[in-house]
Image (cartoon, rainbow, N blue to C red; front, side):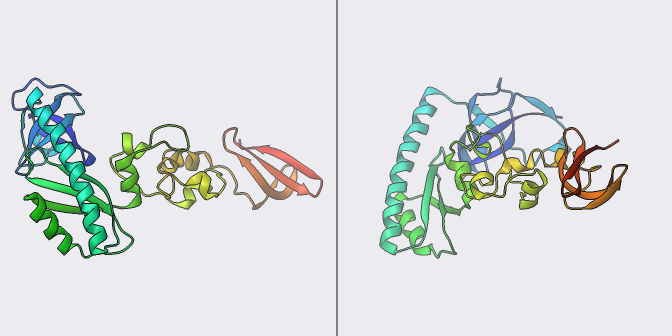
Length: 260
């Protein structure tokens, strides 16, 4: 069994588990960690927990120390330098006439790597751009192309519900979302209602889809013709919450039936 703690980093909402290295840590602590031969700055998002070897990815990296005042000053300076690097990179893109849009930049704590994220409509040959950036900043450069959902996750914002975006606050992965989920929940198929700020279908359509499917299981589909004690008619609507449906027997008669 291993004592580990979950840590998140600037460019990812994923949680990575690190050996606590006999340190007294808790959720919310800022830490310096050894991650893939890079020294980086992260935030603990869990308390210390005990996990078996089967639940962890090895080799297990270690937390080096809690962030000190000096570490925090270095981190803030790195943030400032990364912003300046982003401005320079955008200028290079214009000079090279590349069809790409930079979103963010990030220095690892040890400044051994400089990340840039960007969006592009199509594949971009950025080899010349990478050379220019490496010559300018004298460090390893990594350019990451992201999609519109990842962009929303990175930048954040307010959703149509009035709350902060799910992808920017707690979602770690993008599950598949389909238009059938909107239909399953009787939502109007209006893009302004069912699309998020990223322009894709709302992630939250996934949240209640399973329960809607379960509740509809015993109800007839709208448009089908069925026979009941009241006669034969066409199903014109269903109410999954009180397990009922409305049956049009003729032009003037609509009855409500309940599933027994």
